[in-house]
Image (cartoon, rainbow over all chains, first blue to last red):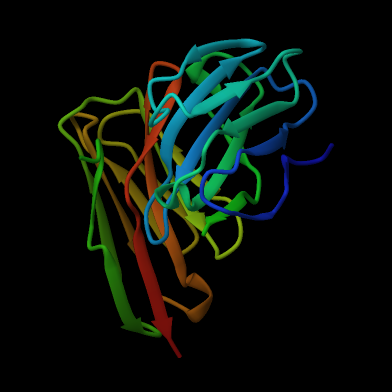
Length: 116
Length: 109
């Protein structure tokens, strides 16, 4: 597609529920990033994929967070047993190349998660 | 603790005023980027600076990368209400990008 598409745009979950957030990157983009953005804050790095390989998951806040990109295109961020502190906007971004030399990230509009 | 510290956190000014926002770090970056984010949308890239001491201009916006590639500034001349938004700096480290907490700018007509 023309841009990065994320779904759902809004998700309300009860504490303890599992959620799955989907990201469709720009077709052919090698790199994919997930960020968490709390209200009034900048995006916090969660994880990075190069094709299907998850090269960096150092930003995932706990083992309740899991991300995958099995075929090197669509990615899913899964949060198990959601807690109120998980409430945030989850941003996905893709980049055409793997290298940092052409660092143009295109962001999706985000998925806003509210945990009650 | 943020890898990149932005200041000020909030800025409210009148239309026509000038302003500068800062992005500082103890880390050296291969490049640094500035983004602008509107409510309900993802950040949109404004500029990338790569060389220490580099200055780039984008209409009324002037971006500068510090000589040591650890800090950057964004200067806006004659601010307009359309400049209102969240301004984010992001440092490139290897393949990753890390963001500052942002400066929320409000320009009043």
